[in-house]
Length: 193
Image (cartoon, rainbow, N blue to C red; front, side, top):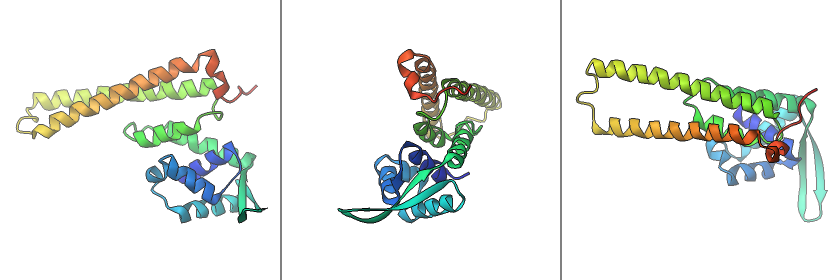
């Protein structure tokens, strides 16, 4: 699964773009550091996606700029994008927070409300399960005396991870509550009939 492909296709779902425009967007919005890509990688992804039939490119000449190849997504690319987006959003690696939250940037207009709520509930369920497993492990470790002699850093970092998880869980609750509000229905794809 290519996160870069997901990002490129997700941006092209919004509007046709050229390679430099895509790279600039990823840089300005912090996606390039998450993806750990440089400009040539974006161009290679565009070439690969065009060759595989997910996007098409057309040379555009404007007065103020040299000719640029502007790409647009097609129905095959849109389907592939949704496949990639879903793979990231429902990944059962609950600790992979950056992938989940960065993929959420591409939900707007691409998922139905019901699908979005389903994904949020799945994430909450995975977090509940993960927290239960962690607490059981910590309880056993305490009983065995495995925490005695641990550096102070261990306890502080553990508390911080709990806080991160609490904030994430509350954010999921907030998203779920907001998804059903009438004024937010414009942000979802139309229900398939």
